Image (tube, rainbow, N blue to C red; front, side, top):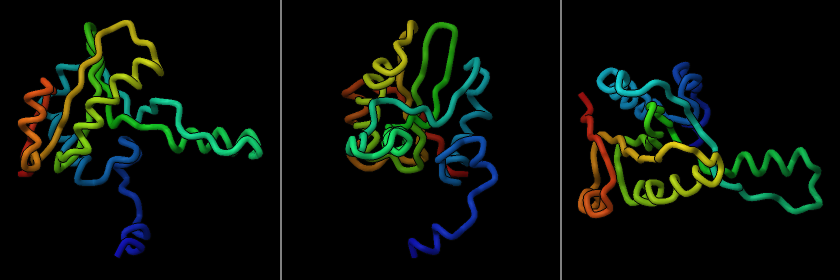
Length: 148
């Protein structure tokens, strides 16, 4: 089954939102229809962190590629005149999202050293059991936009 999935052609919409899966793109486009005017601009697939270098016996181009491929990637970054919002986009928000909401701001600050405050936003169609109380306890912003 996995091989069949890999063989399928990439969505044409994926060129606008690198590494988002089609269901996540659908969710993101629903978000944009409702909230896009609250932001000045968006960037996508933003690399943060140092990545994991290969051994030093690899040539420089291979080392650079290994680092870039292993860096963490933020789905979307929304810009306002007073803040930067790191946006995690997923159809089903689970424990993985909590880790991303916790680590992405730290890595973004280390990588880009922004002068504006950093916010996080989880965008999901559904929130898995036991996750919403964690989002609330950690004071993470989240928006649920159910599938139509």
